[in-house]
Length: 552
Image (cartoon, rainbow, N blue to C red; front, top):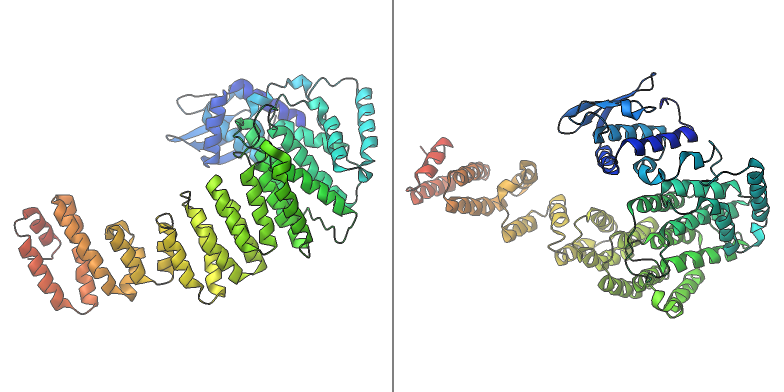
């Protein structure tokens, strides 16, 4: 087995099996962390099939991997073999091959499927006993014949076909390997379809597999938290990200206004995603995120008029009564807020978002997508209003990563006269959670006095800041630094230890330069003489003042 050349499917499955046989699951997970942290360097694929690399652990370790015989691989770490460093190198090599890193990370789950039960390279249909080839061909032909009728059948029939196409795979190993094989099986029986129908087929294939991965036991309460294993989580994440990428890239465009026959198909698709979204567990909102993607990138950019949004809002509002205890109230409120947003009924949207935040803290992306849509549409005054309303919601659950939110404010201030006043009011209302972006915004806009007032009110020390942060203030408004340095120096003196005296002298030297810059050397001379006299009994301080050449 030589990773210089692309692995065929049989070689790939063999590598997965060998990885599970030679490394414990814990070692694989630790190696995965090293791989994600970018600790692998100098990777080389040799003609002999060996893989050489260096992995930074406690020190730099040299690793030699033999993919065809992992037990013969070596590492210079204390463990020597079957270690996390070897796993990290193997994952890096697999990634360069274009294979799924997560499939290898999940090796112990996929190893439950015996190698002899896997399809031959390229078939991608069965995980169970293969059976006679003739029987397989007959089954594929039957499914293709059923698939040829799909253009005239409802979406529910499509999912029945997907169920038949994947029935031989089972769901006993719910992981990335299952997801890949299921999609291959569904793709194998796909008929020739018009562009729009082909788009929906690909979308529903992924929705079907995602639903199979995350499907709850019948006894579990809808909307409640659901435990999901690591391997299932990774597989579901991959499916969701693939759907998102295709929408973002414009690969899945659905235009019922130009293709009237697609209107019913789109309605069925919305009904399917809506139903899954409104009944899924709160801690795994896969279909909620897909619902937003479907509207924001698959439908809204190509719709004219309000009828689609009004009808969707009606369906969402009636769902609570129809679904009863299965209904997820927070998901319903978020979805309704999106429809009110499209209908430009912003107050109703804000009211729902605040209610949803009280029921369950809203995640940042559930708010930022509104701002992103307004920025793309260049609706700057409206975006300013949304920034004011959503800021406190973002801060309410101690979200410190507010850089994206601040970037939207930058755009609003650029395009809306008077928006900057609202910026400061909103950021102050969001304190203390907005303190980082608030300070950065003040510095970026030259609001030196406001920045200094904030530091004085919070008791920050000048020595906590890099010189580059204070340099613009020293250049543009040096007088503002005087009280900042004076107060801090006095606090250091009050600590009465050698280290604090050194810090105080460092600040006093900066003060000396400031007074000189302000051409007030006489004031400085008066101050330092009085200062030294006032603290004359502190011998250690007097020594530091002399070392700093502040007194003779």
